[in-house]
Image (cartoon, rainbow, N blue to C red):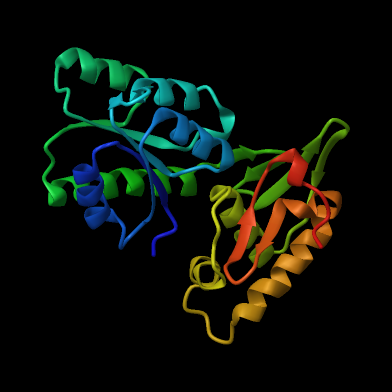
Length: 239
């Protein structure tokens, strides 16, 4: 499954089924039906893409879009509106709020899937080519292959080796996403021979040693893999 996580906020069961059929085999898809459920979900974790209905039982998707665009932790989240309201004023409103696309129902599943995949390709390209990226207390400088820990007392070069840098930068770029060892091996080492799940564990251990009191930013997820989080309350030494 692709590492992109998608949140669909849609109260129509029929549309939920169509979207799930188009996306669930390729992406990590979560479905909720209300504004309240969406905001609760977004408070827990980040998503690569939000697909928002405009008219919802307790409000509208415009509210969700406006709120996340103000939050730093959702700075890399793309938004697509999916709505039965096709008036120009609605489309302009959605795009003005920062949405990347506005799709009017009813939808053609193949066209819808293609537009979602195109949006996510742009997300991946943007992240991979972002030279300077700030995530929580960390600043990544891609061209120099360096990651700095930035605190009130200054900044410290973590002095990561090449594969440590590639692994940690991949985790940073996928904040709050659970990544399996297989996904990390494929993304960081590719088709290199003589690498195993243990290779990932060993590199995670050495990175945590260099993070010191921030080692808890890399969390072990039992039977699943690893997750990076920048939340201060979780930034304590991992067990």
